[in-house]
Amino acid sequence: MVRPHLQLHPQRDPAPLLPAATVLLLRDSDQGIEVLMTRRSMNASFAPGAYVFPGGGIDPADHSAHPLAARRASQTDERLTQAIAAIRESFEELGVLLARHSDGRMANKDDIARLDRTQALAPQIQTHGMRMAADQVFVLAHWVTDRDLKRRFDVPFLVARMPQDQTPVADDKEQFEPLWIRPAQALQRHRDNDFFIIFPTIRTLERMQAFDTVDAVLAACANEQPWFHSCPRAGWLNGKESRHMEHEPPFGELALTCRDGQILHHLDWQTEQPVRLLAHVQRLTAPNPGMMTGPGTNTYLIGDVDSGFIVIDPGPPDAQHVQRLWQACSGQVRYIVCTHSHPDHSPGAAMLQRLCAEQGVDARIMGMASADTARAHSQFVPDHPLNDGDHLVLHSGPDTHTLRVIHTPGHAANHVCLLLEEDGLLVSGDHVLNGSTTVIDPPDGHMGD
Image 1 (cartoon, helix red, strand yellow):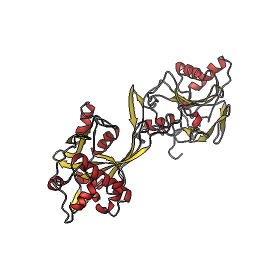
Image 2 (image 1 turned 180 degrees about the vertical axis):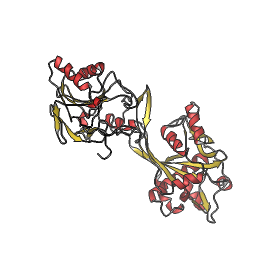
Image 3 (image 1 turned 120 degrees about the vertical axis):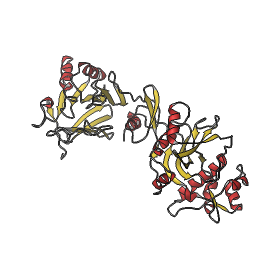
Image 4 (image 1 turned 90 degrees about the vertical axis):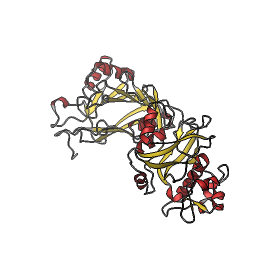
């Protein structure tokens, strides 16, 4: 775990989580699945004016209503409570009731007409000899509201088939304008700025596009496990706020730079100035984008002015990039380390060393020498060879920054990764890539390694 005092931003506690539940009510149509959505009040404290699925907070009464609900044998008490809350909220907000009579008939519009949506649901259905059909409500996904928001919810997204012979009618207080819409249609209208939906709704609808029928959705939920758990993070990209789930490449960087969810980090690739990731870790991307290099080779700077810097992977022989590295280190370069000798990672090392020497700085080039199998453009002889298990150490006041060398052949025979031990951070070179699979080019690259 990263040492807290080396984080970029002061620690803060996100807002507490409130338990809630929401439900996607689905029906089949000639054009595919449709989902019931409504527009939230413009005065709502959370997502005002957004189109949402019916739902809300879990009440204490939802826990005590278990005897009035049918359940599956595999349905836990927690899932049952969540299903009851979703059924209750659907009734209060839209007049939709997932309930059965003792003879198995689902509630219809006549049953609903006899009930008062402003009063507690459980006693009313008991009076009319019904039970909530919680056994027909399945968990689909699990969302936790982003850490940056003032109101946060821990909310399963549930799913159920819309009962026949019922028509949703909004309460015109919390919810307005109920409509049936296909997931793809909702997403397109959102892209056209004609249908405001928030991030969890967007991502859930995107997953729903893969299904053609309600039966297929329910079958995919039969194992009682959500398709995913997510508490997204946000940063800035192209001048706009950009949110990301755990499986997406930016999420890890946002977790590193803004641990408590602050929306302060810019995700745009930078080739002209370094991006600070921690107080002692910076990244400067070389201006060599391409099919093999992505946005460019990432050069990492470990340390600070007091400790001096370890420059990892100076990149291609680009004079401007090397000059920027020198400036970012304020001339305090201690070591130049190459994770491997490919031409997009190591040639800049000699250029940076010469620049250091011109300024009276002795910076040794380190790494593993290239093997006999290396191609001509990847020949490399370091000033100081590194071996598996070696340590490079910097000291800055009370702090020590220790890089442990880990030999990781595969992409190249002389490839190493560097573990920043005090913080549990790995500089992986080309051994592990973000968003793609590394190239293995024999004979120097070898799948068996």
